[in-house]
Length: 362
Length: 267
Image (cartoon, rainbow over all chains, first blue to last red):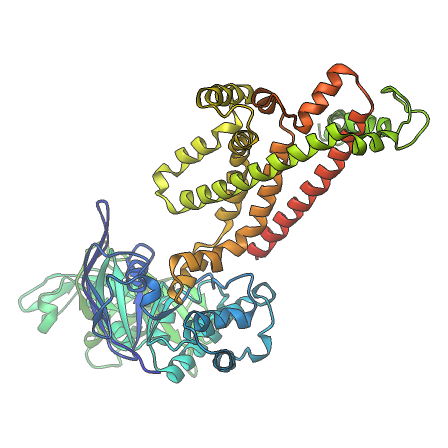
């Protein structure tokens, strides 16, 4: 099975005065694992429902494999779908659930048995064909739902928060499973989630969404390392947003740190910078080009191998930073005053609303 | 205060509870023993036990034909009420959320309208359009008063349904009708059957509308009523006892079915 391309061209969905989806443009490549990431109300589920055919777009065009599917009902789009609530047919056993799409397509009996067997093999539930859905655990049900969604080899597979109902451990195990399925099947996957960790771990590319629009589309590492806006920087991982203002000649001032830095390149125009907590380290006058400042430790979150700190800055506001406990490293205590610093190259100019610069965790 | 709550007031509450239960169940404890008497008159406590009045009931053509008529009317009425009521539930479920509440009130209104008004209305219509004394018209009227119960019972089951199950069927390749019958209908079926049983007894028990509509024929409640007015034979006790037993078995069966289905869905 190979994947098909999916295109959204200027897709909008309005509910009265509300734009659930506004001018949504996206090209998903064949075989790509594309994630729509955003909080609830960001339009990610609307975009998926428009693609599945459950919601009609107010404007724009959706194409699968170069063919416009706007006029087609869900059953004619030949896409697979996995839902958060599993949505297995409660009165059918596992085998019948998985066989359902094949029977609708008039597949011969022996072929149905063979393909259902293969699908159940893939999700490692080959022995449970006779069980009823209520006799399965949550993780097993979701695997059955997955087998049912791919048994007819759809070129596009949609997943709507498929791991949302599972507990943390199972969620992590299922992430690996989904990666394996994707590698094995090669179909295009459009995956919806509000969990940024899940998105980073699974996706080829992520479309970060907010208020019905795409904030940024890129690969997980580029989204994390080069967020274009404050919204993306704060939604993916944790970050510190610091405010800039014009400083002395040829410099900009970082307000919260009360220090001037050379206004090179993008920094000259930017109003805010984002600095990830892991990019901040104890200064102790070591490194060349380190922007250093003094801060007072306010909170300590001890995680064993990792320690998260929140520190109060000289110009007010808080700053998150974290340390791996390397050889000989001490753990700071609340009230300690410490020299911290980061490299200017790790400070990323971002656009977006300005506010009092407080560190925000996602 | 706490001592009192666990002491006297708790006792009072449970006494009140059992008092109400006894009051509700009292007729049953009188009727059933009386029905097993062999004496000529209704008398409590019964003397001379026997099943004479049950024999009378089954051998009396008037009683039997009244029972058969009631059965036919109730069957037709419950069939109509169940189908129409279930379709109403589906359309309420699929329709606009804004009008759903109002339409539900409208559809279930016959519950709060006194049967005497419905009887009068149907009677006037029946005379006007020439279908007085028709058991089909009676079944129609009974379907009207039974349908709200169907809407309530099936509607409750529908609200428990996960709407994405039908969506799953659609996206997997089923058209809207096929998706409904393969995804939603099997889960609703126990509630639909339970609602049908309920509707059947709403019609089977109904006296007032039948009294208005029929003149040449008699339903079972009409026969009981006529019998009580004229002669008060223990046959009435025998019929009532039978009705109590049959109704109880059917209702308990329907309720168990409905609960088991709710369990399947609620997993």
